[in-house]
Length: 477
Image (cartoon, rainbow, N blue to C red; front, side, top):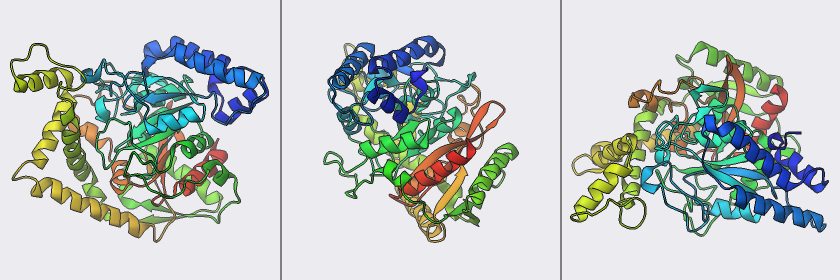
């Protein structure tokens, strides 16, 4: 039995019935990492001793006849922008290569309290700046389905760790698609929740008004279980919403709602690749057979989403990364002649080309004489995009689009063309601008490469997106 490929509930039931030990689960995952990660490069750091120690503690509880929680003893990986106490936190960047987190992020604290076990930290584009994990300063993560292809980004390592069986679930972080796109490329589920539903405390910031931590897993039910633990208000993050968090797994098991109305925004399908279109059409037929109504809608400001998104996130990034200056933590240039020299040489060595590009773009957008023309105007467009979605959800219950215009592309194919790489986010950034809950659902293959669709619900209505995801999963698999 491959314990590393079982679901959360299967692992829990097996542990409770003493069919296998928690140590055996962790050892299976560590064995998988040892056998596969040399080629895939999902992890930047692995902590076998810490994981096995936690596993032995769970086994001791079971041996003593104590009850264990649903997540107790379940192994997971963590994108390396999220802090785990006493573990490295590089954010995929040389400037933080030797930084060790002094405390747990709120999401990690909650998962540890639930008994879940951290296996290690996963590779990512530096600070989340990328769609392929090729912008990591520590090497690219390969797609487990085809090692010549990228795993996506920026949470590429997290997605690869899950689909290859190196852990049961992962925590990723999504600013403009960084959970959903790698989940699509790797053929797993990945949920970008409503902005403010999950605490960002303890996450290395990219763009603070966009960033969202969320789960990645091999099933909708696993996503629901993890989300029920990590979601909720946090006094350490003023942007978290006070709304009570439902038990999403219980919500999935409650009486079925009446069939929903699905909206297809025409702007997302104009000129779409015929193979991807055929897969999405096939998925929509599954929903129709289950009683869903499918109608065309319009999101007229979609054409401005990419430009709006990249103006805003680079502006926020240029501000957030100002703290990485060689003074308090991170890489510090040796023997500086003065403070300016310290800043220049520390940041020149510590930041890669894409990080520097985005800092320059953002600083320009915020600079005197250009603020009104770029940043301020982009904020106005963001409001228009939000209004588009608000009007759409007056007509429909859910919105379905492709997650990516294409499946995983070859390593090196787009990395030297930043504009082409930015356009890879064309189907994901609109939902980020509006802060909506959006889940990637695997829905087919082009050749041997996975294709995903996004199911989006109205703000704070994660339950509807999860129910639709489960409806499709149960009918499609």
